[in-house]
Image (cartoon, rainbow, N blue to C red; front, side, top):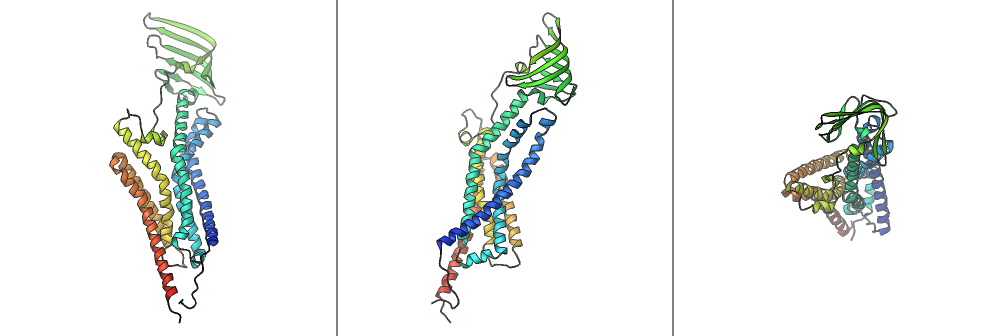
Length: 389
C-alpha cells in the first residue's frame, strides 16, 4: 500500500549521471576561478619583492619571470584546498537558493548521491596536490634556491649597491660610487685579500659589468692595480687605460649547497642520509607526512560545506547561518591543523595526531551524510508502507 498522492520516482542511472556532471561542472568551474584569483593575488604580492632584482640590481626580465614562475607551486599547495571549499559552499548554496537541490531530492537523490560529484572534485584536487607535493613543489623550490645561489655567486653586478662596500666572497670586497641607467659604474674599488701575503687593490674611474656564459666579468677604464708583498714589504703599481677582470676567478672554491627541507623529494624526506643528525631527521619526517596530509585535506574541505548545508529542512529565507557555520568550522580545522603541525615539529610523537586532525573531520562528515541518508530511506519506506486513505 502507498500513501495517496505520493508517487516514488524510479531511479534513472542516466539522470544521476547528468546531475553528477552538472554539479561537478559547477563546482569545478568555481574552483578554477577561486584558485586562479587567490593565486594571482598572492603571486603578485610576492613577485613585487623580486622587482628589486631588476630595478636596482640589473637582472634581466627573463630571470625575473622565471623566478616568479617558480613561486607558483608554493601558493597552489595552500590555495587549492581553500578553492575546493569555497566552490562547494557557493555551488550548493546557490542550488538551494534556486530550489534546484529540492528538485534533485524529489527524484530520490540521497545525501551521498549529492556528495558523489563533490568527492570526485576532491579526488581531482587530491591528484593535483599530490603531484605538487611529490615533485613540482620540491623541484620548483630547488630551482628557485639554485638560481638565488647562482645570482649571489655569479651575477656580481646584481649584488652591488651604490655607496656600499659589498662582500662578494670571502675577503673579496667591491665598492661603486654611482651606477647609471646603462649599467656603467663610476668610482670603482676592488679589494682582494684572500691571499694575505699578496693583497690586491684595484681602482678605476669607470667600469661595466658583463654576465657572459663563461662567468661574470668587469671591463674597467682609467685605473691602477696595486699589489703589496707582505714578506718583501714591496708595493707593485700597474696603471691601465682598459683592463678586464674575470670575477669568477676571484670567487672561493665552489661548495655543495645544502638542500633545505622544502627542496627535498619524498624519498629523501622518508630516507635521509645516515649522517643526518636527529633534529634534522625529525624535521624531514614531519615534512614528509605533511606533504601527504595536505592533499588529503582536500576531502575534508570538500565535505565541511556539505555537512553544514545538506542535512536539515529546507529554508526559503536562505542558508546564511549554515554558510557561516561552515566557514567557522573550516577556520577551526585549519587552526588546529597548523597547531598540530607545530607540535609535531617539536616532537615526532605528535605525527599520528596530524592524521587524526586531518582525517577525523572527513570520517565524521561521511557519517553525518550516511546518517541522513538512512533517515531519508526510513522515511520513504514508511511512506510507501502507509495505508491509503
